[in-house]
Length: 505
Image (cartoon, rainbow, N blue to C red; front, side):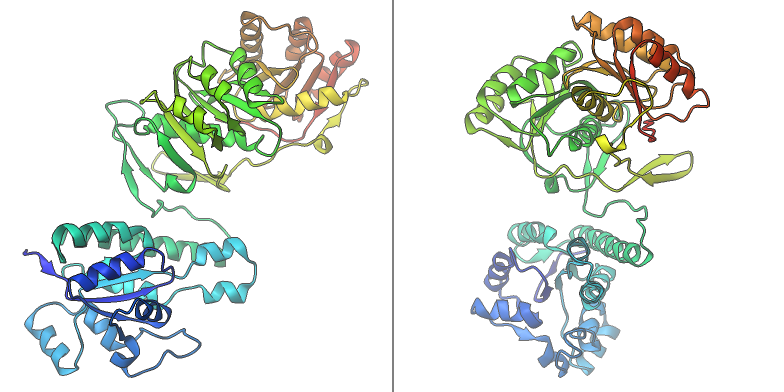
């Protein structure tokens, strides 16, 4: 199929940012422009000739703007095939062909995020725009469709490189994006009305990864990382990088509003976490938790990376560094290592729902967004926790929540001393945590222990007591909870229950 020339364009957009450059390109190529409402006024203010849809249809915008483009003279010009029968009907009814349709929908998703006013939300359900997108995408053999402002740059590149022509491959690619935009838009509206979140592959785009979890597996990412991060430097993100980054963001969300915190993760599990008065001190204490596992790890902080911290980080090999801000001199230093990925976080966003492919289907659940506070702790021993112990117990509980089950965390002075995770026995998880802590020179006397689930027997508190632990946090719920509580009472230990299990399979 020969390339097709764009001679006419229909433009109806909500967001006008970036539209001016496209208008200039269309004018340079003498492409005739039709438009509506606010978009038409925007184009006219650029001193560019534009036909109003109203003069084409002979109907004004009616019903408070709810009906503008819904007319045969608009949709006929979009849906007409470039063949004799359709061309004859276009001539009979004086309908122009539209070769390019540019739409940016009413911001329904943004509106529901910012208001509970149902009348305002309902008015942001786009009817004409979504219909224009679907019609143009259906007729991709003849029409180029731009379904959102995210595709403005791609359109500019197409116009510039092909001087107002398009190939069938170009048009089909845009149509594919258009139907994804349409599907996503309808899904968000459906979720609003049903008050639930459904599963759908994200419509914002597909990025092919170097490979999946292993080199023999293909991998892809559906989504828009630019909403969450500025990618400041380094190699392309891999499948494993993305999985680890997700785990890092989930963990740091627990500490985002508090004092400086630094965390080091390896294969989605935290091997070093610390809260301190400065980012530099937090980094040193987090690294001390397991300097061996930190090699090739994911680093994340909730504070600004300064030069001293950057110089210390620069001495080890890491895959990804994430922070909300960097001092300019620190960033200059970090970017000298060309393969190290550096991300500036815009938002520690965590979805409310979680999806996972399994067997021949999908399972979904609410994200575990519960974070215990001091008010959630139920002391069950004779000895009650001190303020310092409460701080450490809550810190340890945040860490244990983000480690693979079965898991145990040992902590003191808001520093992860040792962890055992992914074990088939809670006793094995505790022994692993103690072994790691002792291996890296930590004194466990006075430390606290957190468990992601209840103790079915008192064996863990017995082992913990022998190691010098003084306080324990766990969800409770075992029919033998009292056995562990009694042991703690007999050995002057503290135990608090949260009532919330944090299994992570």
